Structures are given as C-alpha cells and as structure tokens.
Amino acid sequence: MVTFPFLNPIFQPSRWTIASISTTNPMVVTTVQNNLFITGLYCRLYIPIGFGMPQANLLEAQITVTGPTTFTMPIDATAFWLFVIPPMNPGHFYTPAQVVSTGENTLMLTGTFRNTQDTTFLNAD
Image 1: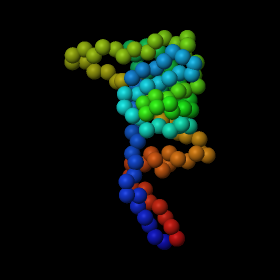
Image 2: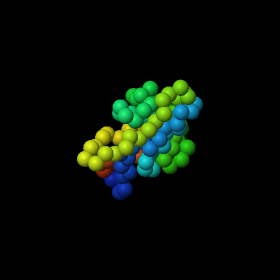
Image 3: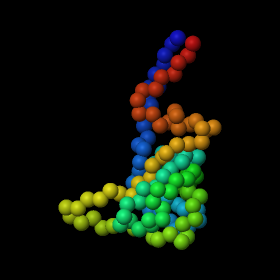
C-alpha cells in the first residue's frame, strides 16, 4: 500500500461573520469575508440579541451560493424584523451574528475533500 499526502489541504473555518441578511424570499445572507461555501451545504444562523431578526436565530437550510460572500436560503424572511449590527461601544464587546456550515447532502461528498484541517491521506494499492 502506498500513501500519498495532499500537499495543500484546504481549511474552511466552521463559522463566518454575517454582514447582512435580507428580508426577502428567499433570504439572502452576506458574510464579511469570502466564505468558500458551495451550493448544497446546510448552514445554520446564529443571531444574538441586539442584531434584530430574532426569527432567523437557529434556522438551518440548504444554501445556494450566489457570489463569494453571498448565498440564498430557501426561507421566507419577508415578515422578519430587520437585521442590524449594533454599534460598538468602547470597552464593550459582543458576539457577532454568524453562519455555520452544518453538513451537506451525502450524495455530493465534495466537502469531505475541501473542509479538511489536517493532512489528508489518499491510499492506493
């Protein structure tokens, strides 16, 4: 058996800071950074108190990527409160609103090769 390491494994952080969430159907989520998400991932929203849109907290859905920092979720947010980023007061900190990838459709199996932190090995006989 021969073992070949992947020389440049890709690490994708598990959570990204949310810059905005639309009140549309479907909901559009924008992250602060390029998120490297792929269409078909399942993502969950974490919206702390103070950011508005409490209706979206802990919602999870399969996403469709529309740009490097944007994706849609099949959620009707037209009746949700507005998403706002609270002002930062000197000496006070808060946990930002975040989106977390929670899984993917197992028929895709692309994330198993992209979302790796440690060296991944490919075994060939």
